[in-house]
Image 1 (tube, rainbow, N blue to C red):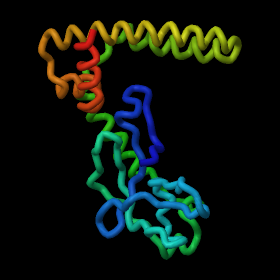
Image 2 (tube, helix red, strand yellow; image 1 turned 45 degrees about the vertical axis):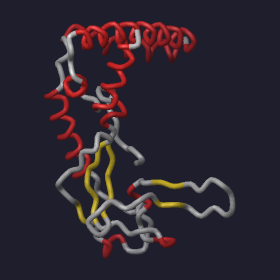
Image 3 (cartoon, rainbow, N blue to C red; image 1 turned 180 degrees about the horizontal axis):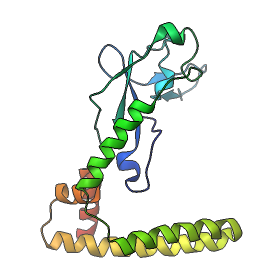
Image 4 (cartoon, rainbow, N blue to C red; image 1 turned 120 degrees about the vertical axis):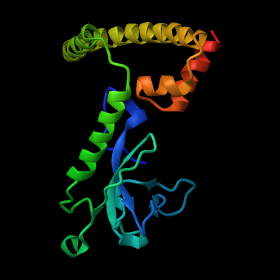
Length: 194
């Protein structure tokens, strides 16, 4: 899936997009004929499903999430209004799918363990400082990012190891972190290899 929406809170685990339905199901990727060669470019971006060049024609859109969630709400495309123009040129309203994905993230956020307010404020301040430093001294910003990555990796390993010692399940960790079970399992297995 080609993801259009992303948050810092949940990263790739809950990236979102407008998904396409054709005949009531999600079609496979659209391939582009670029001549001969071993690599055939493809996409699953909603705008490619316009019926042109033998591609499937989207009937409805709905919100989709990288975690596997799909919205129940569907938003039909009005092909009488769209006409023959490519979808990427048409004025398609994506506010419905975006609102549905945002509501899904609210459920994920509510189930996740709350971050202590002082730590959340510190992270916002660090983000602002890093952005300012990147503009003025990009190498210093990269150095700071490297330090943060090493701190985060160490704390992550130590904390995950403690969770393993407590017998916490991958499902519980995934819910608390707002991530997928597979990512939580990797985190816990990596900690066990310490």
